[in-house]
Image (cartoon, rainbow, N blue to C red):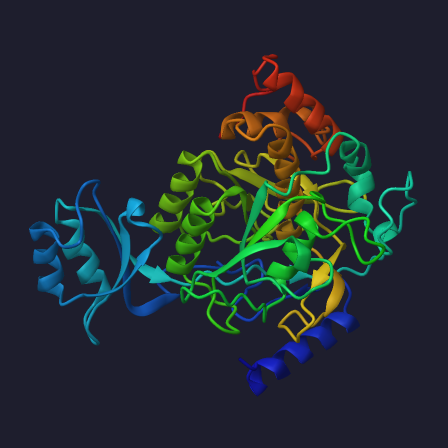
Length: 447
């Protein structure tokens, strides 16, 4: 599907503006600046659509459910995930209030919850003016752009790779705008694809966000080209959650993508997206993944404030903030008692689609955001799971928090959580915990 002329023109204008004004926000269509709520459900509702979850043991064909569906004239659109989730998308007749339909359904004892479908635009990305370069500390890896990936030096990736480079059996679910599966630094890593917006296999990335995220987590490494991923040997499940060239994924697509990844072997799911408004469907999908011992890692958001973002704030999720090339909290990164850890997120060089995209960079490029910090942590989780495949989610989270390099105030603090992740230390701590070491957290947290 081709981008429309208007979108293409807007994108070119945005790219040109960012080139003239370094460090200014480059907002994807549908994004906002830090003074505006990114995802207010009331403003971003998808006309006529809602999500319903039935209580355990109740199917949509039951008499109780059928009564409410008949009353509001709702039609089944599709299920969300497998039958185990009990969720489906409904369409109400034109002109009928979705709010009234939701209220009617929630009065039915067969229904656990109902809510309108709303969109969550992919996060704004930031165009920084830095071009950090660092010396490689040994012969591995030989990727041509590795010297520009300061994040690996800061977070001690090379020492971590001496412990493990990951396992092909450990799969990373990239639930995002899609992935360019033809990219030379990604194509050998793709294990499966799924378009959760339309239930197809087409994950072509017209936005650019998902391809960039995938490269950070697990780009091919030591192949003499491009960049190195945090989890060099781990596979990728590429999950697209927005239709066509849209930068507006909706809550049903995201929930569908999370459950699909959980059901298709993901050891860890990356969610470089979020909203100030909670979606019960996404929260439920995250709970479903956690119940299957799938680690969920989510971005804290780029509003530069003590602002909660869902699903990062959900219990059990690893909420990630960003640090910059000076190893301090990035100016845009959200903070608060709900942050778990931070990771490099500024001036991050990674893969971009070979096709034109809304961010406006192709093949390789660098952008900034908590969206970039999140897959760094996701890749680290994949390394931990490669060594210890059955390690419980809670222990993986403890591993990251107990091994992070303390930043800011001593111990846990609102800006860095438990600190900036350290790849080698995390893998060492994982071994200690797996062997039965002390599992107490280093400091109390609100999460």
